[in-house]
Amino acid sequence: MGSTALTVCVAATCVFAGGCASTREAPLEAPGRIRSASCEDPPLQPYDRPPELTNLDEVFRALSRAYPAELRDAGIGGRALLCIVIDERGQPRGIEFLERTGSEGLDIAAADVARTMRFRPAEALGQPVPIKWTMPISFQIR
Picture 1 (cartoon, rainbow, N blue to C red):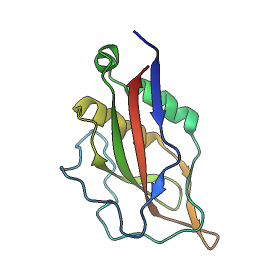
Picture 2 (cartoon, one colour; picture 1 turned 135 degrees about the vertical axis):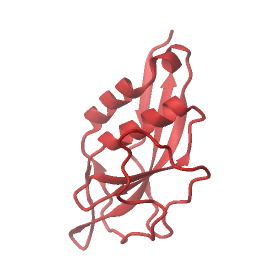
Picture 3 (cartoon, one colour; picture 1 turned 120 degrees about the vertical axis):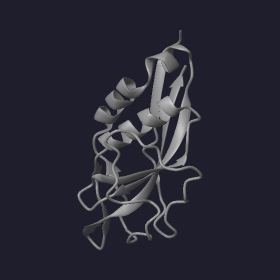
Picture 4 (tube, rainbow, N blue to C red; picture 1 turned 30 degrees about the horizontal axis):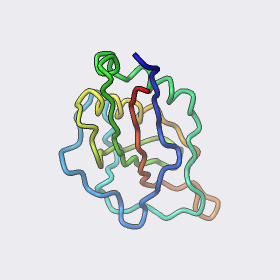
């Protein structure tokens, strides 16, 4: 078996102008799913400084823990594209799938990883603002 490579893209894209695209399927119902905001809500305020992921080490540990062993051992990976609503404190307040991995186990793992993310919030005119942020989360074996 090759080494495990887990990746999360930290160069995410904000989609404040039109909001996140709607999911093609119903959002994943995972335990502890964040529900207080939705990517389907009206767009949030534009910003002049994007959010910054502040706990990258914790996110990589979460990626490693969340990757289902049976999928990892079988060499099965995948990439989910998530829309995350980030509040003015840098906390994720809504998580929706824009694209799924094709594996329910990896989708649950991606949602779990997204819940661990913490950000320096986006700012508009020097003030923290909530935004919608698109972020891919990938599980792969090299």
